Image (cartoon, rainbow over all chains, first blue to last red):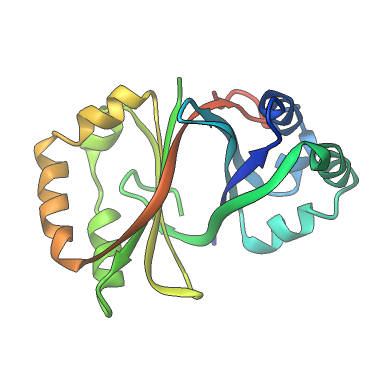
Length: 102
Length: 102
């Protein structure tokens, strides 16, 4: 069942775009691990926040991806840029009015 | 610029699945209005919450969709099922490690 992980990452002041650069660095590993979408974004209303929407083939694939060397390296690189202010939620996709998304 | 609208909708107790049914009803209008994805989901940890991730070609398309007769009818139908507890965030997608998403 398609799994969604949606989150907000607070960045240290001035570090938002560096954090975006890490999160958007091209990765063949993610798709190979079962990642269907990984959209990274920003909002003028929240200048020190990075937003992420991830869709995975299932929750297990997402969990397993956190152990990949390239993902662990990216987390280590991002960690000093984070403020510690994080939010978000996870859910199982059950359908879509567009059809075919679950 | 791709626009993301991510939200949680609190449902009246026992009404979650009816709310999911309204939100996942097939709609040709949404894609025609610029909706790229509209994923609806649930979580065992939050039994009275419906989760939605929407991706649109731009923020204006999302805003304009709220005036479509079919969307207004769905909102009217869903309203009595809502608890009033809502959350979420909106952002502009700036990139993806998978490539080609922004």
